[in-house]
Amino acid sequence: MRRDDRLSIIFAVSEATPYAKTGGLADVAGALPQALVKLGVEVAVILPRYRGERAGTVGRCVKERVDVPFAFGTKTVAIYADEHKGVPFYFVDVPEYFDRPGIYGPNPSEEYPDNVERYAFFSRAVIEWARQCERPPDLFHCNDWQTGFIPLYLRTVYSAEPFFRRTRTLFTIHNIGYQGLFSPTLLERFGLPPEVYRTEGGIEFYGSASAMKAGIVFATAISTVSPKYAEEIQTPEYGHGLDGLLRARATRLVGILNGVDYEEWNPATDPFIAANYSVEAPEGKRLCKADLLRTMGLPEELDRPVIGSISRLVAQKGFDLVREAAEGLLHTGIMYVLLGSGDRELERFFRDWQRAHPDRVGIYLGFHNELAHKIEAGADMFLMPSRYEPCGLNQIYSLKYGTVPIVRATGGLDDTIQPFDPTTRSGNGFKFFEYRADRLLAAVHEALRVYADPSLWRACMENGMRADFSWERSALQYRELYERVIAGEGPFGEPT
Figure 1 (spheres, rainbow, N blue to C red):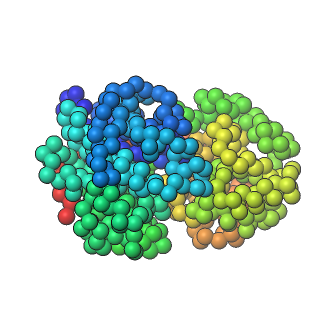
Figure 2 (figure 1 turned 60 degrees about the vertical axis):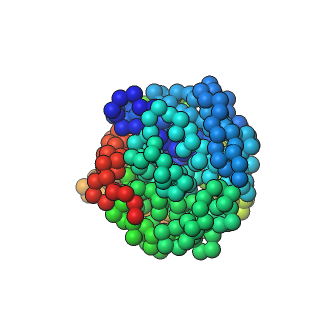
Figure 3 (figure 1 turned 30 degrees about the horizontal axis):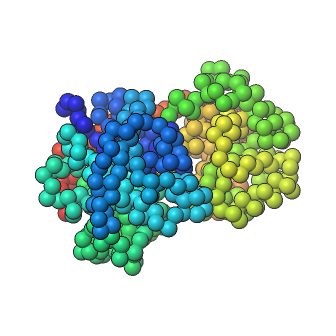
């Protein structure tokens, strides 16, 4: 795999753009490796070959047979390969587990009951594929519970394997709320020793086994997708039962803020919006607002402020607060547009809200990439009231598009959004701290007061549009972390 003395990284992940996507994890897996390659790191991304996604239709077969011990026998997989923007992508082809509709389930609200088994197998297949490469990787970069088995397998089943003697692991927590819980009776089926099922130094989690805990316990190092989230998950409020473990491993835990792909999200070049614009030439944003209102079937009242949201409609994202604040929002005089899907009860509420106020509320339930770009460009403000948010990407997209974020101060939202100060004209948005509907409304009122002064609003927009959250900065931090982990510097010696 490695062609010279560069760092050699296998980036294992369950989804990655442009091949398979359900959320922000795919955006990270598609963009971070590109930035790392530009820094001279050799990265190979590997994910399942989902037949229903682009991953199942591209690439060439580069290895017809990889035998993977699993389920009391051996399963055989093929490996396909493709290249995207200078990054090699590999796909584990095993129809038994991945020739299905969707990625994690047939629809966003229903998962496959054997998901943990699917990704335990994928994790072991990644290791067996790596064993057949010319040289071992310096490090496996594992992402969320779906790849938490990789550090576990390496520290147990493959612990005496000379090939991986110097290989280290980094486990990145993108969202600790999803933990890959499963019955410990499946450990034997997965080919894992039963003694890993213990509370201290093992994967026991309140009567279940946890793939997320496996990654945290057995990886050489742990990272999260923002500095604030790294702090938050060490508390009972945000740690989802793993806060004590994370406090115990705090010296191995690093928070690195995600970047964004400005090639895809840039109003100056965006092909999906009605008019391109920039901080130097902002005139096109008004045309984009008119286009958004037409697209959503709303009256073209261009002087009325428009608040937009793009999100999964789940408890994490805070749309119970929007529901509670709905009438108060409309009393401020705004129009509201939403693109998203998820919880059926929330979907029903937003459909009913639109029917009750068809001239003020525009709702699209589902996923629509072009509409997402139109909302970022056409809205005046972008609302993200998350209960918790490991990093968040849309608030960063919004900054670039001059669409001022209104966020709850949590995780990456708190790291990226600084309150606008009308006196100093510093800051790039508005935020509230307590998870309450009245606090959300207070932040909206504060934003509207600034919006009423064109000079102040322009200053706030420009502050956001000039900010740089590109992947280059984050990739430099990851490269430095890789180097420290591989060298065993400081706390990154062999895991205990």
